[in-house]
Length: 358
Image (tube, rainbow, N blue to C red; front, top):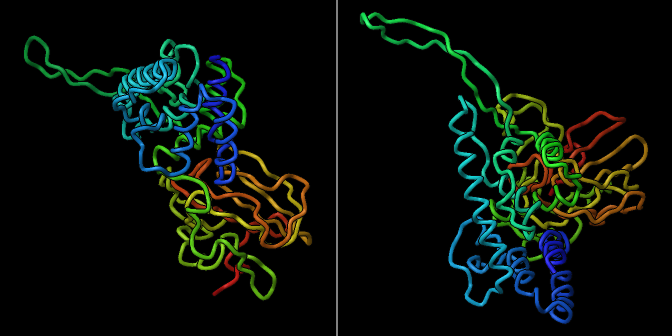
């Protein structure tokens, strides 16, 4: 029975991505999977934005707390073992953070979210090589420094010594490659997507569904020239990062920003800007996360990135205003938003020149 439970735990975030899906799947599970309904209900609670986080599996694992008295013994073992694993990870991450030198320490939620996505419901995750797992998130560099000591005569003596510095890896694609090499796991889009969803739920408390849509997002907002805003009316007030050069939020370096960022809650519908054919609908761990690209002909392509769910499929034809994805914070993202690009003959241009104004 362990394998089915583990599978349910790992795919629940992907399956229960909208209100209709949660209700439909919930009734089916009640009917045919009564023994595991508590675990699924916990995920439903998280993904539905419930305030009763003390009864959620994720909250119990990430923040601790008393386990419900009526929790089945098998699930209690899973949660307790994951809590033990997190304690071990915390210890190794503290060691790594003490070895950093001017660099930002590890994102503990990210490390734990990936571990959780890979091992919750597995046979004794706490027996895994936790130090080896944490090492997948850093590189080690040998450096030298001058040390001043005092000899027996009281004279100061300067010597050179070598020491090791831990440098956190900010590129998730590299992290996943390290994990694949270290533990021999074939990393799939499902692994990456589930880890991103868990990370966002724990860090931001975000959920998907129409209850989180912003005003105006329920209908397309199309300008006189036929160009549709990807997130509805009022997009101007939600732009958090413009097209062009900016300070990178991760590295602090000044570099080009290839589109505009529009802050919207996770689960907001993302709409096609113009009629066209979907050429890409996939996951990119190193940058865009879940993203969609649409070819509108005459050299114009639009891109919609950091989505929580893909709706459109490659090869499908869409019209202006059709929902192609739901917004999120997957990939290289600091919070829920839509990264929107317009490309003309392969060159990225400022989307503001095309978006409809109020």
